[in-house]
Amino acid sequence: MRIFVLGVGATGSLLAQLLKRQGHRISCGDRDPERARRFLGDASTIPVQQVNARNIEGIVTAAQGTQLLINACPAVFNKIILRAAVRLRAHYLDMAAHLTENPFQAEQLRFATDFQNLRRTAVITAGIAPGLTNLLIAASADLLDSVETVQVRLYEATESDSPVSQWSAEVAFDEATSRPRLYRQGHFTLGQRFGGREIFRFPAPIGPVGVVLAAQDEVVTVPRIIPLRSMDAKLGGSDIDQLRRWYRQGKLRKSRGLRPSQFPRTPTPGTVHQLLHRGILHNARFAAAVVVTGLKQGRPTLIRWDATMPSLHLLRRRKLLCSPIAWATAEMAALFVKHFPRRQSGVHPPEAFPAEIRRAILRDAKSRGIQLDKQIRDLTPQG
Image 1 (cartoon, helix red, strand yellow):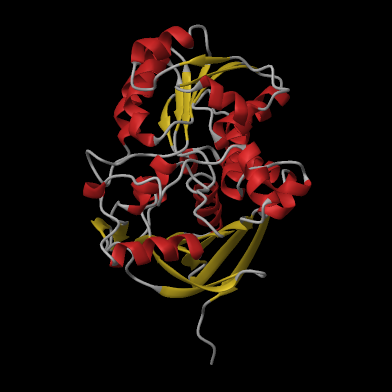
Image 2: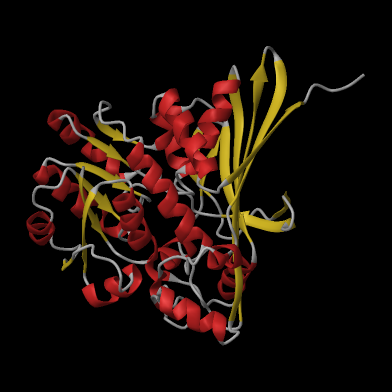
């Protein structure tokens, strides 16, 4: 398949290389081709054009002839890049929603009729979280007769003597300054930023961690596909603890803008190597858990999934100088491309995929090094 990847940062560069290994014909676009090539590496032969994601004409010209347009840019550009995909009559994939016009409706869904008319498919929020988490929620719902509650719990930690961003600065700032979305008793609502703190136990070596409400896309897409009563997402770890401190100090507001001292640019592989060599960056971890409760044969049941990614140390041993989040997002996006639901025209988040495709992606995720563990517990009171 001819694929154009727009946005060649930590995730987009790795994704482009993974797709090339799958046998696809890959070309890329980025506003800074020189920096993009530093992410791709000197040995890469993948072509990179200078493309501004704000310019639909530039995107269409650069991606002419593509069959799949992949949006690896910050979600603020989603609508422009979706329009470009429609102009190109191409399939489309992205990894996040922006949720500005309607905080409870993914803006990509507005293009459903366009893609249906073209008999093309747009796969949205197809990364690790959202993405893998959506698949785990749907896998749990498959095992239950009805779903009551869904909890997404994420862990991000960067052990560093100076700020190092696991996400792009724009994405990290957008998430940190957005109010969390909640689904309560069948209705969407907004939660308090960094509120709802609780202790959640992640698998070893992480253990118990304080988690707080976070702005996650799963909360606005899953309830539209899977009937349920309540859903929320919470995030914990050293990265979120620092953001919470800045918020309490009044240093984290959209009106103050994105400050490089708080949200530095994502380091290139060369910069990661230097930071590790100089002893500034020590390690980084990312983990995700999904907890779903519901009824199975009339009995209250809990299903929990834990997804554990390789740490920065383990990735370094594989000669991969990227964060666990960038690695996992790229790996999952590549699997969404491998199992792309071409026959399902329209705009679809992962939980809307046919069950056989969802199961195939989860099987492949395990083979790629994402550890998935499932627990099922009967919650019927004893005695």
